[in-house]
Length: 216
Ligand code: ADP
Ligand code: ADP
Image 1 (cartoon, rainbow, N blue to C red):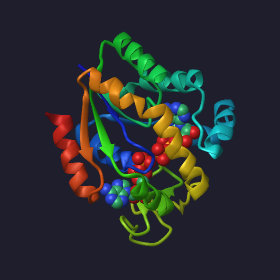
Image 2: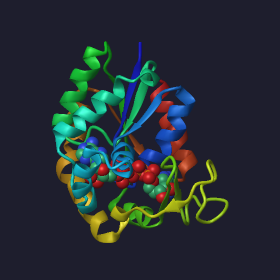
Image 3: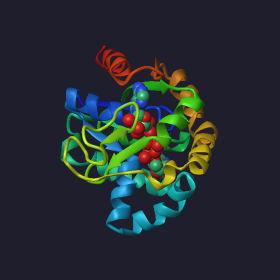
């Protein structure tokens, strides 16, 4: 049966960093809703243009379009073994929709690791984040620098700082997380799926804990 895992945590917790590593190790598709929106924006699709106005303000894109985008993504062949969801769901309505989608695929969420990191650390992480243009690989100028400044180690593409990683927008994204996404902690705890991992440690240590959680 396919394995579906939801990575939960505030912006900057390390979801993308860890999801890429774990998805590869477990042979699961990595589904990042933020990356999907950014790809749509780059291609100037209708969805990308709609999402942009929300993303630049650090607000959530409306549930209906976000849910439709993930439903389409989950139906693709590379999700046959399952998927690691990074950045989705972000509201209780999205979580309900995910449960329905997975049920129709004959599956369900296996576990929900929460990467817990204090707000002050998040701001430091996001202000030093550099992302690659080609595939969204993430670096940090201090905590995880690329071998050559400005260039992705993995695919040689250019690294850039996201527009929504500026301080003002980051503060709003953290507030939006607290208001709209943090309720999912209780949502998944009540369903017996939540496992908290201390994310305020080096990338390798957090990764080792996460791997233990998702493979047990
Ligand atoms: P998210 O997807 O949750 O927003 P990212 O994976 O993009 O988070 O990480 C945010 C920033 O923090 C990136 O610059 C990344 O390199 C850095 N980072 C991720 N995990 C750690 C960690 N455990 N310690 C220090 N920096 C980290
Ligand atoms: P981070 O990695 O810092 O948590 P993401 O790349 O996941 O940020 O998301 C960037 C932006 O994309 C969000 O601020 C929001 O506007 C939009 N977005 C991503 N996922 C969702 C979602 N599940 N629901 C609504 N909006 C989303």
